[in-house]
Length: 483
Ligand code: NAD
Image (cartoon, rainbow, N blue to C red; front, side, top):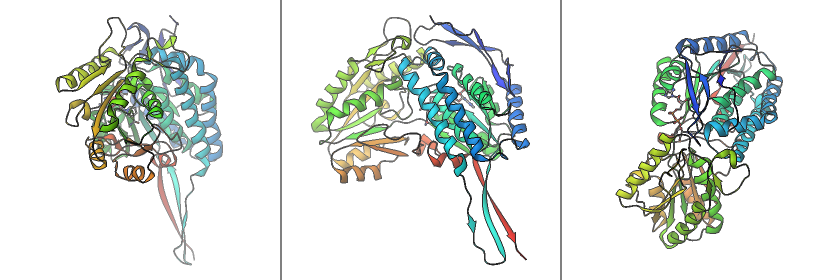
């Protein structure tokens, strides 16, 4: 097995430090074996990290800098990640379970955020507002100050990159609470910030339990803005903490996103959407295509194609899956895997048909065979609740109105999709699907440049794209009386 450093520390005010709450074991989900220990922050560590970030903010070191210079430093962080791509990707595989090639995709995706937001740093401009000859009035954008960023385990590198790059580009100092299950790779953000020349205390990275360090960070009175990516119950707790301190927060929560597949859709091309939409990262993607709502006339053909894709994926340790291809790694933990298995079993009890997969293999590791469940109806638990695993639910519809109604029948609203050759039909669906983003004829179309976020229980606020920049700044209006 690849050897990692045995013990990883938190990064506070430029120092690598132990945690007041001790240590946590980090496990390889492909084997269940311990691969390292990580320091665990307590509330006192959180306070030190917030004070370090606040000191940087109050010093003006970030906000007084010419934005184009700050943007260059943000871009340098992205280059640093690429220079260390191999070690970050391998560590990511060992802590998270995904295939090595997917880990490389994730690190490259993370670097792209720093490139994109580094470029945007100098584009945040105010406007002048005419008030007549006696006044000169203009707006300015100021950084919020201390940005607290609470990260989930499914894409620990990309999720941190997403918020950190935009927050730094706009001149904020940050405290990152890395996920307990996958804390190791976040260390590279601290290294990257140091290498790029950011003052100590600009990027603090701490791992700790959600109920302890996470809650202490979300409720800290000197935090000025919170970005949270994770589950709905935690999002509700974060929103309450933010409200208590009267600070804004962005909530990027879960989803139960649906693709509507019409009778004229190109099902051969759709195989690729199944491959990426539900089996990439073993389905542990907030915007996964976890439901397909297909016209009844094409249902059996689609189910057969989905079965072919699912059974064609080789499932096993991520370190052995180095090249892009038909393969899938472990889920993040046996607990997550067992939860997915139980949800499939419940769907069968409720009348769904298990086409393939759905069972835990009889060997160690958090593996689950790629799963297809057919004859799912909108009232079943599996049609309403996020599995967060490689489980595709197939439902059918008779007419367009029914398809939209089924797509919109969950509490979530993160993304949606429509597959058809008919532009009018696609446009109607795009307007009617209740979601923050709609894909037409390609699941996951878009990129770091396109705004992303949910409606309903999928959260509020947008990350990615220019929209995200406004999370990290506040508008100041300056009115000058001329005499
Ligand atoms: P989670 O809510 O359990 O944990 C997310 C983070 O919150 C972790 O760092 C955790 O330590 C912390 N946390 C837990 N309790 C806390 C508390 N009381 N106060 C403060 N912080 C606390 O979610 P998870 O299981 O890590 O992630 C999976 C979920 O994340 C899924 O629902 C998935 O859909 C969602 N997700 C959403 C997006 C998105 O962009 N919309 C992206 C990735 C994942």
